[in-house]
Every structure is written in structure tokens, then in C-alpha cells.
Length: 371
Image 1 (cartoon, helix red, strand yellow):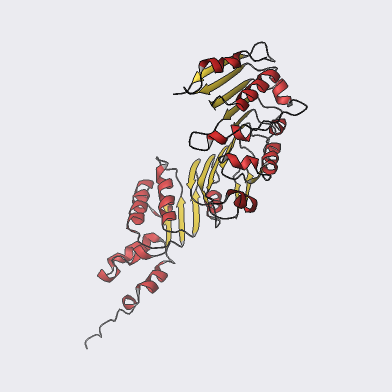
Image 2: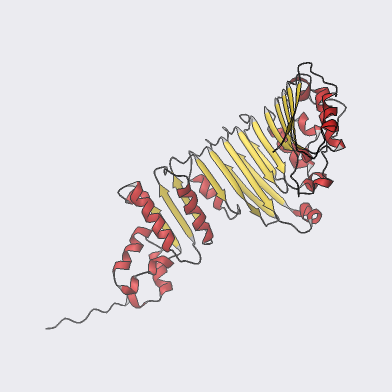
């Protein structure tokens, strides 16, 4: 008796349903379905879920090759979830960086990353939807983190909690049409829990409300609101003062020159090194001023701790000379002040600085021409 032909009803299902079924299995096995028949050849490439686990491969090299091929052939218009379990740190940082970037390009919604030995990570994206938290949570050994991207939302908040983190960089640009109106509405909240953090670099168009928990280990910081107009807005003083109040153990501080205020220096009593950097040409420099408001009492750090001061992109404006004069006069333990300028400032004009009164008899002033 002849056997009845077997009907392949599964293969007759629409691609959308097949992709839904394959999304419940690891990507390694989803890819293997391409060997079933020509009908299944590239169905896996449209699956909106990628589940990649290094432990199911013979070694890291075969796993990395597989991930590259999967991401290369993946044609899903939207990746709902990207799960990556990797027990080894790749030889090249560009490996994980590239994988995450490609996933984000596919409109990634959910990220689940576990890399046991990861110590350095760069994230370039809009830090929203909890993606960054999930990325960082999967890297318990992370020592250095850089978050760069653009902010398009009026209300944004994200948390960074990494016990081993020692260096944190946050560079966020805000694209705005009406600056004054927007700055009044924007609310960016950043919470950092990193008890071993030693270096913090914050660069934003509009300064965040930033909370640094257990920041006693922090010794070096750089703060730069990239739009100089933001320092004139009433909302600037609050976040800036609150931030510096949390990092009072700093020994080295770099400020964009237009954000300098003596009240900020009062919050950093242990400061030993101060760097002031003026904005570049093409950023409204003709309107920019260094906003130093001398208080009745000179900041303690200037009287007894600051040993080196560096002023970068000195343009020769009157208020810049006043700042240099104030710092030299009140820097009683100052060892050196270096001023970097370009060819647009005349030598005779710069020589005025050399004649300013110095609070420290051992202070040397050096004027350097920028290339």
C-alpha cells in the first residue's frame, strides 16, 4: 500500500508568521532553517529578534564570524530585541561597538547585553527607552563609559549604575530653534552611581540636573555647556552649583570659559589645577564673555590650593584680561599660568599680563601661540 504524500503546511504559512515562530529560538538555530528548502532560504533574515550566545559556539572566533554574517544579512526593518551573551572580551573594541551600532540602525527597541570582561564602552545614540541602562547593566566590569548623542525630547532621564566605573564621559547635543523658550522647558536628569569614579566629563548644550552618588573618589572633571548663551539663563546656576557641590574633592577642573563663575570655584575647595577653555571661532565668539563675578571673599581653593591655571583660546578681550588679572592677584600658591592664544592678539597687548600683580612670588606666566 503506497504511503500518502506528506503535506508541508508550515512552509505555506506567510513570512510574517514564520518570522514570529523563529523569534522564539536562538538565532543560531533560526539560521539553520535555511537548509530545509528554498522556501526557507532567507526567512531568518527578517526575524525581528536576534539572540546570540557565544557559549553555544566552539570558540570566540567562530562566534564573532557568525555575528558579523548575521548582522550583514539581516534585513529586518525593525529589530525588536537584540540579546548578546559574550563571555570574552574581543581583541578589537570595534567588534562590540560595531554590533551595537548596527542593531541601533535597525531601530532597536530592546537590548540585552552580557559581556563579562568588558572594561571600555562607547554608546553613540539617543539615551532613551531604557536601552542604555540595559546595555550598562550587562557589563558589571565596565571601567570606562562614553555616552554621546542628541537629545530631541524636553523630558529625558537615564541612570548609570556601575560599581567598577572609573571614567565617565557624557556628550549630549540639543538641537533647538528658539533657545530661550526651549531652555525654560527642557528637563534632563542624569543619575550616576559609580563609587570608584575618578574622572567625569560632561558636555551639553543645556546642562543636566546631575546626581552623582558617592562621588568622594572623583578627582578630575570637565564641565562644558557648549552654547555660551545657556550661562546667561536663570536656570543655569542651579544645576551648575549643585553639580560642583557634589564633587568638592576635585583636584583638577576644566571649565568652558564662558561658564566661569567664582561661586562655582567656592564649591571646589581642594582644587589644584584649573583649565579655562574659550569657545571656538564660528560659535558666536564676538558676543562671548567670561562671566567671572568676583565675590567679597576670594575662593579658598584660589588662596591655598590652585597651583596651575591654563587659559585656552585667549582672544584678548577686556574681560579675559580681567579674569587673568584676578586669578594672578589672588592665586597665593600659584606656580604657573599658561595662556594659549593665536596670531590675532598682538604681542604688546599680551605683555600687559606679564605686568599684572601676582599673589605668588614663585608664579611663572607663559604665553604660548596656538598652531
